[in-house]
Length: 376
Image (cartoon, rainbow, N blue to C red; front, side, top):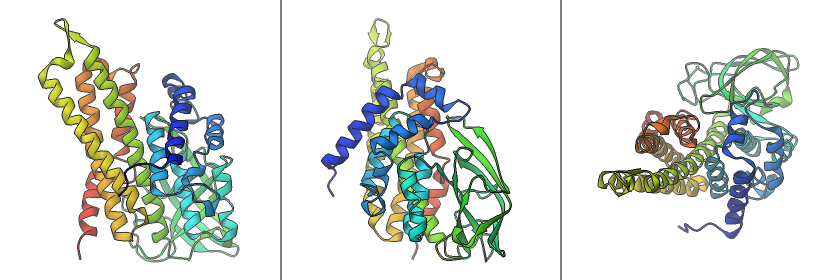
């Protein structure tokens, strides 16, 4: 396996890192992340102009990347800046469109790439506890096409989205992988009610209620009742993105902690000269490199068969969740009390690392899933 990025990917990473450093400073980021909208439409448009969204999609769909390592490069840069703009929704909805959409439906990918449409995946439901096949929202045939009724929870940037990709059950038991269908729902459709709220780590989520939402027949994405495979693939891309984002955040937390140990003095010497802290920092460096290996493995597995791909993704998400919590705890402890203050960026990186573990499946969920996928 070649661990070196191509020249194009290195250039993309450098461009994104420079843009985030210049335009997305800590105070600017917090004003956006904890503001009323939880994102900046202006900066979202600039990210699109830079090609950051286009890099998430293959050339066949109007992008210029789309491979696992392209997604990893983009989201690692985003993680270094704690960017809250809706990249994850664009990735998951766009890859679902690419995998199962009709030619007419795939035309919407262009509006995702140019930033003119904000998309969100509305799949998780109250009480689902990360189980991908657990869908209680119902879709029944109507005179015009379909009628959707149900509730979705913690929809990332759901109150800013113009397009929702909604999972609904057209057949089968509530926890069956068979009978799940996917629908493209305009966020302003009659019967769609969104209640937005801020996240503890910045950005916005929404509770989405669907009350007899009437959709045309062309709203169905893919074959009726066969949406689970598309959903699993789209979420898989999201898992890879989250792991890469967390890796970028870990790198910053590691760097800031190392600098603090080299400059903070006690008894007239830098605290980094104390052997106990040296050992803890060395362990932290090794753990972050293990995270990088897990992300590389997951990115390389995106073109493999389903079982190999999903096992690599679950292994990476488990690793990132465990190490992310460790990096957060150790970095704050080695900073002392200042590590918890709002004014220090580290506290925000720590919050983001902890919350990544709770998106698209936590460590317990992915450890169990990794084990189950390995059974004959």
